[in-house]
Image (cartoon, rainbow, N blue to C red):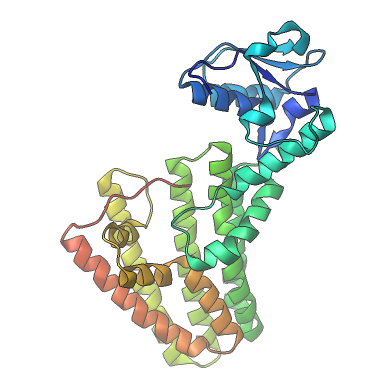
Length: 345
């Protein structure tokens, strides 16, 4: 594409222009791509045969994404086709049929929506996230983004509610509640990815979103350890409960130190400073440690361990790993060797 933005963006129908593509009206998304490719805002006409009326949401999103860029609606018969581009070409998809028509355009926009959501994974995803969690969470994101009113914060709230249900099951459900809590812990780990996917798909990533996501994750992790420890204590497994309590306390202290690091760095509030430090000078051993310490891995491992009746060794393992992790955090904190955290909702 040339440095000059197209004078016009073409849609086959008004329905296509207002169609949601991964939570954003197609016209607004195409306008963003046109101005991004041009590296400047331009006066662009979005044209539909016979003219069209953008929905209120389409107008809001166009203003949010394109800023002060000037644009207008038009009839395709009123524009110069030589200086125009089809919206689906901007979005990188092709209709199943060669001719441009309403039905083919709608199907192509649905393909674009799937492609955008599929691209919201992260290079730093763990093994479990890449092959199990992410396909499920992206399906949830796809469903949630079909409604114009959904926001990443709604997904964060959903993850928090699952975490709350998990804690209630662990505290008051007895042996059955332990199993339910384990499944809900894994479910929370899956849903945890939805808010970030929605934010990246709709250009809504923010430091506030990253902070809320991190706090929800930390609360769910601590709630799980505390809840499982209390649950097994109720069942008479005092030593395992004590090991779980130690893991919970140590995890809380370590998370607090990482929070302090995030604040001191002036970056977004997350608990990922140690992970970034380990990845700064990668090795197979460090990469293995990072994967094991990532939530997607230990949530699934904990869920499976509890379901097969291995809750006691699980709590001892958590205590040992948490103490080792805390020692590394303290040493790194004392020597001020943390890498700066990055913003990601």
